[in-house]
Amino acid sequence: MILRTSGWLPHGLPSSFEQLVRPSSRAFSGTAIAAATQKKQRPRYADAYANKHAEARRTANMARQAVLRKQRAEALGDPIRGIPTPFIESFDTALPTPSESSAAEVETSPDGISATATETETPPTAPSSARINTAAIPQPPNPETPLLNHFLTSPELEAALSTSRALTTPQVPASPSTADPMTYHEATSKHASAHDTASTALSRILDLSNASSRHRTRANTRRCIATFGRHVTDTFLRPKPLNKYQLAKNVNPADTDTPTGKTPRAGADTGSSEVQIAILTAKVRVLADRYEGVNRNDKVNKRNLRLLLHRRQKLLKYMERKERGGERWQYMLGTLGLTEATWKGQLEVR
Image 1 (cartoon, rainbow, N blue to C red):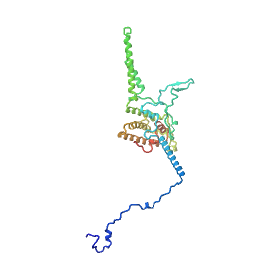
Image 2: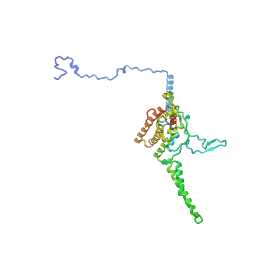
Image 3: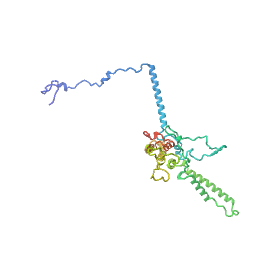
Image 4: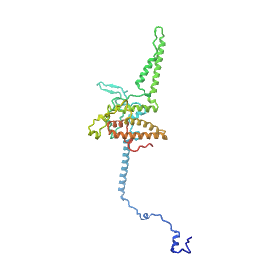
C-alpha cells in the first residue's frame, strides 16, 4: 500500500499523519546555546602599571628558567659523549695523555727539589660534578705505557732494530793492511744510512697516529683493559662499601671482592663492568664522529650507535647499583667523563 500525503487515509491513522510524513523546510541551527550567553570578561588587572609589572616579572621568570635549563644541560653533559676528558680525547690518537706519559724530563733545582720541565703547564684534569669528587680519588701509581700498532711495544721495537743492525753490520777486513779503507768506510756509511731509513719507516708504520680507525680502536681496547682492569685498580682503589647485611655480620671489606671458594683471576681483567663500559665508550666515540660528519644518512651506523649506547646504559645502571658510589665507580666516571645523562632518562640519536 502506498501512502499519500493527500486523499484517502487508512483506517486507524491520525489525521495529522500527513503533517508527520511531510518534510520540514526549517533549517537546522548549529549555533551553541552557550555561545549566546557568553559575556565579555573584564580584565583581571585594570591598572596599566600593575600590568606592566606583572609582564616584567613574567619575562624575568622565563629568562631565569632558560638560564637554569642551560646550566642543567651543561652539568649533565652530552648523553652520547658525556664531558670531554684527557683520556677520552686521547682515543683519537690512541696515545697516552700528557699527564700519563713518562716522557717528561725531570729537572733538579739547586735546593734538591725535583720538578718537571713543563711545571708551569698544568695538564687538564677530568671535570668533577656535584656528586663526583674526582680530587679525592687515588690515581694509578704507574704511568701508561705508549703502545704501537700490530701489538708491539717500544722495547720490542728497539730490540728488533738493534738485532738487525748487528746482523747487517759490514765485517771488519781480516787484514786491514791489504784492504781498502775507503771501501770499508763507504760500506759503513751506506749501512748506517740504510739503518736510519729502515728505523724511520718502521716507526711510521707502527705509529698509531698513522693507523686506521680499526687499529686505533684495537689499541684503545688494550688501553682500557690496562687502565680499568681490576688487576690494576685493586692495587690503589679501595673496595666498595659494605651493605647493611655485611655490616650486621662484620664482614671485612677486603674479602668482598674475593669470596672464599672463588677461582683467582688469571691474567688481565677483561670482563669487569668498568672495562666493558670503557671499551663501549671508545667505540661510541668512533661511531659518533662518523655519524655526525658527512654520513648523516648512514642508517646502519645509526642503529649500531643506538645499540652500543643502550648496552652501556645497562652496564652503568648495574654498576651504580652494585658499587654503591665506591672509589671504583668514582674513578671510572671521572676518567671517562660520564654523567647521569648517559644512564638516566631516554637516549636519543638524532
